[in-house]
Image (tube, rainbow, N blue to C red; front, side):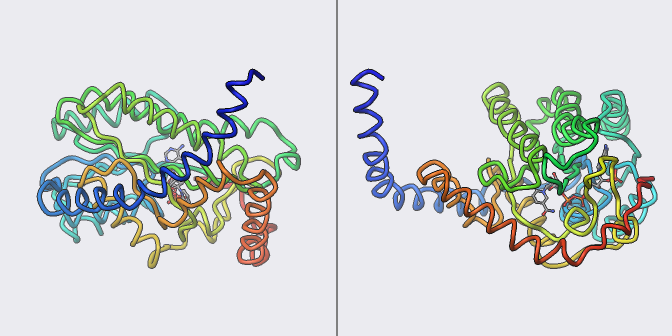
Length: 330
Ligand SMILES: NC(=O)c1ccc[n+]([C@@H]2O[C@H](COP(=O)([O-])OP(=O)(O)OC[C@H]3O[C@@H](n4cnc5c(N)ncnc54)[C@H](OP(=O)(O)O)[C@@H]3O)[C@@H](O)[C@H]2O)c1
C-alpha cells in the first residue's frame, strides 16, 4: 500500500464522520422542508391514473392496491392466484378504485409480463405506476439446502420478477412521466442468517434500480422501499424450506393477513410514491444499520445479525410446525 493510500485510510473515515455530524442537522432540515413542500404542493393526484401491481394477491401488494383504490386510481392486479385477486378487486372497487383488471401471470416469464402490460395498454391506453411486490423468501442456512435447483428460483422471482415487468413497462412509463415502485429490504445493509439468496437478490435489485435512475433521469421516477419485518404471508408461513421445492404452508397461506404494519407500510409507500420520494423506509431507524455496517468491526455487525436471527427464531420459527408444509402452490 502506498503512503498516500495509507494516509487516506487513516484520515478520511474520522474526517467524514466529523463532516457528517455538522452536515446532518442541515440535511435533515432541507429534507424536512422538501418533504412538507412535496406533500402539500406537488403530490401526484392518482385519480384515473393506471397502476399495475405485481404480487397483488397478498400482503403488501394487496394493501398497496387498497391505498391506490382510495385515491380513485385504475388498477391492474397481477399474481398467479387469480381466485385471490378476484376478492381483492372487489374490495378495491368498494374502496374507490375506478376500474380494476385482474390477470393471472408469472412475473418470471417475460411473455407473461408482455401480455399483462399489452392488455393494460389496450384497455386503459397508459401505465402511470408500476409497483413490483412479487417475491419469495426463504429461511434455510445455505449449507442446509439439499437441492441447488431452488437457488435460481429464488433469484428469478426476487430479481428477474422485477426486471421483466420493468423492461416491458418502461416505454409506456416514459410517455407519462410515470414511476416504478420497488420493494427491496433492510437486508441490503443488514444481512441476516438464513436469507443469503434472498438478500443477494434484493441487493442486486437495489443496484439495478439505482443504475436505472441515472439512465431514465427525470423521465421516470423510481421509489425504492426498504423495510424490515412486516406481517404478511411471507412472515406467516410462505417460505422456501430446506428441502428445496417451493414451500407453501397452505393453511397459513390462505389466511387473510391485515392490520398493523402491513397497512401502515402500504400507506407510507403509496404516499411516498405520489410525493415522488426516491426512498421509503420502514421503520426509518433501520437506517442506522447502514453506517454501522460501514464503520464498525465485522464482529459487531455479525453479533447484531446473529442476535436478530436468534430473536426472530424464538419469536416465529419455534411456533411453526414445518411438518405441516404443503408443496401445493396452486
Ligand atoms: N413481509 C416482510 O416482512 C418483508 C420484509 C422485507 C421486504 N419485503 C418485500 O416486500 C414485498 C412484498 O412482500 P410480502 O410480505 O407482501 O410477500 P407475500 O405476502 O408473500 O406476497 C408475495 C406476492 O408475490 C406473488 N408472487 C410470488 N411469485 C410470483 C410469480 N412468480 N409471479 C407473480 N406473482 C408472484 C404472490 O402471489 P401468488 O403466489 O398468487 O403468485 C404474492 O402476491 C416483497 O418484495 C418482499 O421481498 C417483505
